[in-house]
Image (cartoon, rainbow, N blue to C red; front, side, top):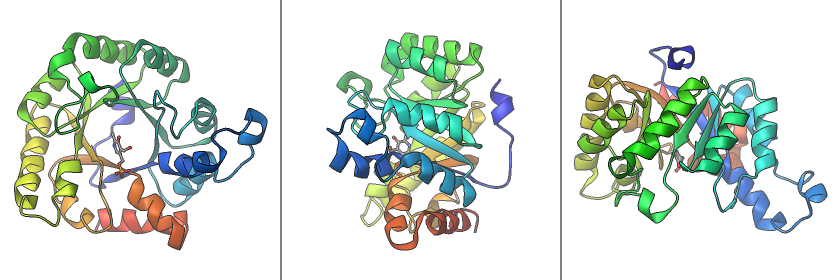
Length: 257
Ligand code: PXP
């Protein structure tokens, strides 16, 4: 089923993460009754449509357990409205698995939310939860949904991802992004480079995300075997000044030189 969504391309694809549009809405309307909350700004689903119009290849949303930004109704409306791919970021919990199987996004990306799920670097602890993650991957695959694992660019995490039969990984670029102006930048970039090669060698489709912006993209885009980047904060931030369509067009242009 993974091949229905993955077609190797020389173009680096862009998934826009729209969570932070909902963050702005929730900052004002968290307590609003449902009837009001459906009609207030900024609407993340409208944003998603504008992202698509500007060339986004997919839309990524994270339905967190604490519902701090995206709400369930946002997810359903996004599913019904967008015409590109929907990537649902989620914790590997029974409730979320059930939700995803009903929603049928094109892909899910398993991300850590609780303390035991997170590695020291911030990626998903696949090594310590192989059985649970394998069961989720198998359930998604049976339903025609691609599973991606958000992992640190490390050998153990990549090997464990292949072992649980995940078709995709998303390499966590946060440590690299944080080190960008510091002495560890080259080392973190090399870690990512080796991670991309290793994951590709193990047959995994390689995505990347977290902390990618309009500056570091010029280096990130040179990583080997990259299929898609998931980018949120920098695009939503730039949209305050340029509008979302220009922000998406600009990132896409920088991604592909
Ligand atoms: N990919 C994953 C798995 C994430 O959790 C996030 C953050 O929500 C992103 C990508 C996007 O990160 P950023 O908002 O820093 O671009």
